[in-house]
Image (cartoon, rainbow, N blue to C red; front, top):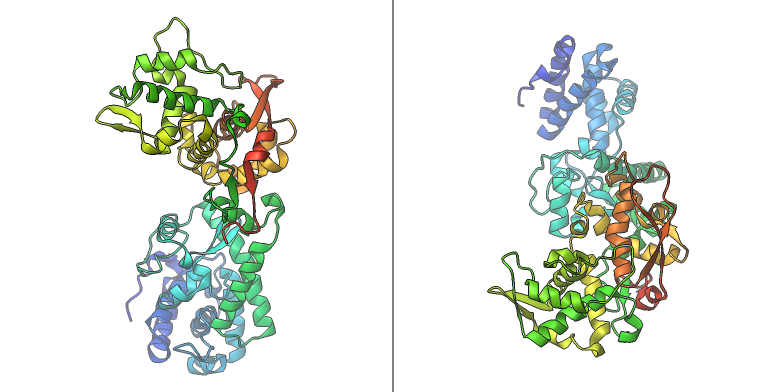
Length: 497
C-alpha cells in the first residue's frame, strides 16, 4: 500500500491518523483492495479536520473499522453482486471489533461527513462510471444523466466541474464545481437521496441495479411534475422549449411561414431586410467596405427608402449627414447581419450579393418564409449581446425559447421589462444576470435582447411608462401584438418527441 502523506492533517492528530491509516491499509490489503484503502485514508484525514474530531477519543482500531464500514456502506460492500464484498458481521470480526462498536463509530462518521449511499465523493474510482449520482446534473430544473448527453454537453459539464470525467473517455477531471453548480447538484442529490433512503428502508438488501432503476423512475417523475418556479411548467416542458428547432411539426415552437405580406406590415425589421434584398436585386451587387459593410451609396439609397418607424428604438440619422451602415445600426446594419446569418446574402471577394435562396425570398409572395427565417436567425443564431454591448449573459440567450413561450402566456397586458422579468426568465438564469447599483440591468437586458427585437418584428408593442424618481433611463411598457399569436404556436405535448 502507498504511504500516506500526513502533512494534510492537523499536527496534533498526525500520530493518531498514522495509526488508523496503518490499520486501514492492513485490513484492505488482506480483505478488500487498494481503492478501499485510499478512500479510507482520505476519510480519516477528513475526520481529523472536524471540530471537534471524533478521532481524538476511543481506540484507533474502532475508528479504522468504522471508516472501512462507512466506505463500504457508500459502495454497497454487503451486496453479493459486488467484488469485493463482506457482510457487516464479517467486517467486524475481521477487524477484531464488536459489531455494535463498529455500528456506533459508523453513525458518528456518517453524520460528521454527511455521507449518503452512492456519494460520488466516496465512490470507488472503478465504480464511478456506474454511479448515477455522479452523472446527474440539474439543468434549468431538469435532471439530466450526462452519460446519455451529447459529447459537447459532457465536455461543458466537465469544464464546470459537474462531472468527474468524460464517461466515454474515462479520464479523470480536475475541475471543481462553482457555487451555482454545487447548489444545483445538491438540489438534485437531495431528492435522489430521499429516494435511496425510502428504497433501502423498504428493501434493505436492494442491489445497485435495483437502486439505479428507482433513481431513473424518480428522475422521470420529477421531470414530469409542474413546478411553480418554472411558471407552472414541468422540467420536461422547459427542456422541450429550450431544445426546439423552431421549424417542423415535432418542434415545441413553430413559426408560421405562410403568412401573407399584408399581415406582416407591423414588422420594420422585415421591411428593412426586404429593402436590402430589393436594392441588391436592382443593383446586382454592392461593393463591401473593408469592414464588410455596405458602401455609403448603398446606405444613402436605403436611408431614402426605409420605412418611418415609431418604436422604443427608432433611429433616423441626420438627413444632411453622410451615413455609414452602422449609423443605421438597428435597421440596415442588423438587416445585413440577419440576412447573412440566414444564408440569403453572401460576401465574396469584397462583393455583397444575394444567394440563390435570397433571390427566391425577395418577392412579396415569399414574405412569410422570409419573416420566419429572420426571426429564427435572430433568436437562435445572432449573438444577442451584440445588440447592447453589455455582459454576454449566455443563459438568457440559451433559454430564449422559455422566454418566448412565457411572453405568449403573460404578455397580453402592458407591463414593464422589470415586471415581466419574473415570469419570462428562469430563476437560475435571473440569478446569474449582471446587476448594477445605478439601474435595473436585468430589466435592461430583457428589453434590449428580447422585447425590442420582438417589437422590430411586429410581435410586441411598446409605449413610454412613467420614469421612477432618480432613474436615468427611460422606461417602456410592453405587450404582445395579435401577430404574435398568429405567427407563433407552442406544442409541449409533442415537442421534442
